[in-house]
Length: 97
Image (cartoon, rainbow, N blue to C red; front, top):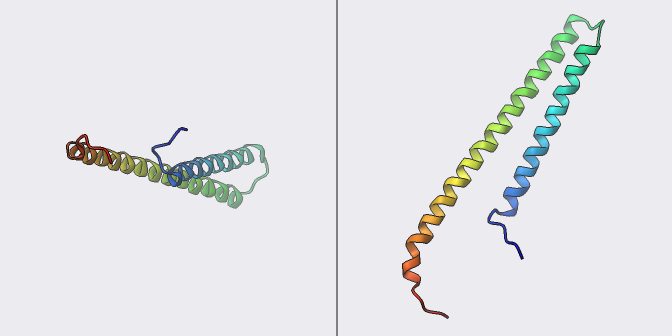
């Protein structure tokens, strides 16, 4: 049996983050495709699509930044836990229960 060191919530969170980034990337691609294929697009619609695309790209950056911060915090917590366990190891001794 393989036991993962990551909790299930962390793996679900990373999967949801990856899914959200993928869907936002698809939305940005569709907007870009619409901008290139639309010949008779008026100025208000053009600027609305550009604005929506910028908002989506900013959202992608915010999600990626949050994921990076969370991964950094998880790594720091993991190091602190390992250091605490290493200091407690001599107290364990060799006794069995």
